[in-house]
Image 1: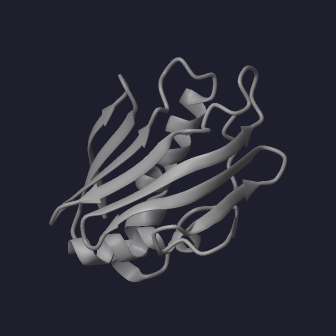
Image 2: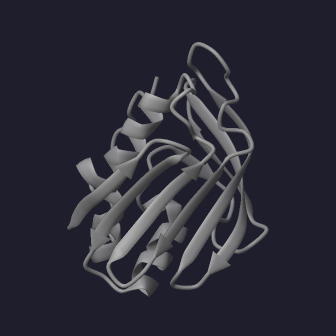
Length: 156
């Protein structure tokens, strides 16, 4: 399904993986967040200007705005507000961007501004990797139309 080519940790978390589907399929699947990401998702996620929220009760909340969509190429969500139940800054995600770009076989996931100095970094890195590779919920959703968001995980 997927093959992680690289994970970069310096300036922002970036995960690059190969997928065996066309960019349009990858783009469409990413925009259908409920199909691959665990948690409560409220609001529309598929048009520029859409504001939506993700909640994992008592652990994580983020309010996002879709800021850029280039069909078959790029999806960018800007974090407007956040709360994460970790020691330290509970709003570390606020002001960061989550960008996903794809070419014919490569998906680049970047959480811009999520840096190793954040208290939540290791848990968030593990969480994103969980959905993109380990559990393969996003790649499975891209390939079959059925993701596996399944159980919620502890990211603290």
